[in-house]
Image 1 (cartoon, rainbow, N blue to C red):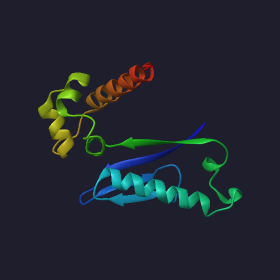
Image 2 (spheres, rainbow, N blue to C red; image 1 turned 90 degrees about the vertical axis):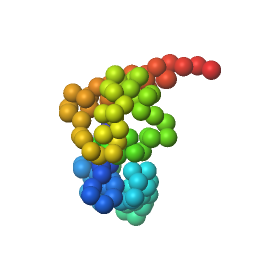
Image 3 (tube, one colour; image 1 turned 60 degrees about the vertical axis):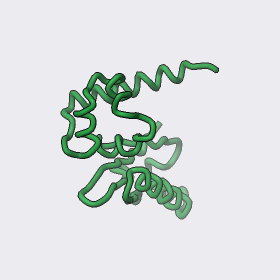
Image 4 (spheres, rainbow, N blue to C red; image 1 turned 120 degrees about the vertical axis):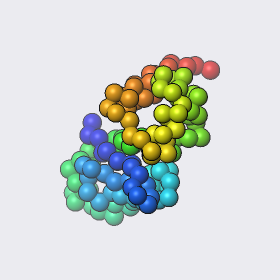
Length: 132
């Protein structure tokens, strides 16, 4: 299945959301949530306003949308779900450093970024196995 990737990142003045593999999809906002929402609404309009044969190849047939966040945007978007103590328990990264990532003071090295990503994916697997 093809994947339409939407990048969400913090710029100097706002959050930006855009597709790096499908032209015409973008959104901006004061929060990561607003930028993501605007990009998805723009995506809907983009697809509905064109005949199927005029859509980019990636949008013809089955596809899924995936989101790639920079750390500042991810922590901004999910701050209502993940507190720094929770993220520390999940990742083993101390809260002060997580705060620096969330505020944009520091950017995580690749090893730290992967540690956070892997911990979140592991949590997702555990949650998918839950039955109530």
